[in-house]
Length: 108
Image 1 (cartoon, rainbow, N blue to C red):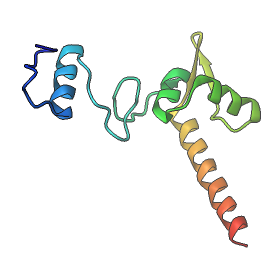
Image 2 (cartoon, rainbow, N blue to C red):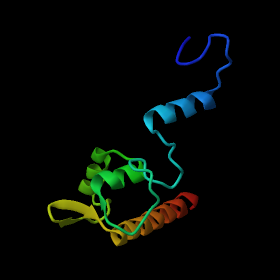
Image 3 (tube, one colour):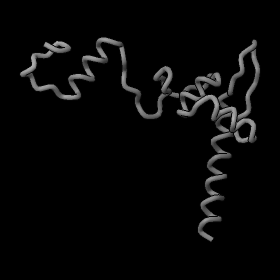
Image 4 (cartoon, rainbow, N blue to C red):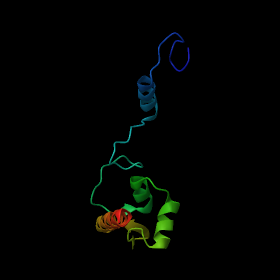
């Protein structure tokens, strides 16, 4: 017997994933949700770690973007560095605008 299976049993990957999930409280992450906590987007400010998990980037990538001036604006509240929903929304609009202008320049 290996991991609860008789050697003659057919094992499929879905069954293994279900057993792993049950044993570890692991839940698959839905598209459009935070990789860190699994929540859907909301209006509350995000920490740098939450922002990075949401956008699936490393903290070093965030700080690299910040050094180049292309990261969302941050505010320090009570000793925590946060990214407001509005700052993230503005940043997304800048990204869309930058991608649109990049696509236009490539097609010329």
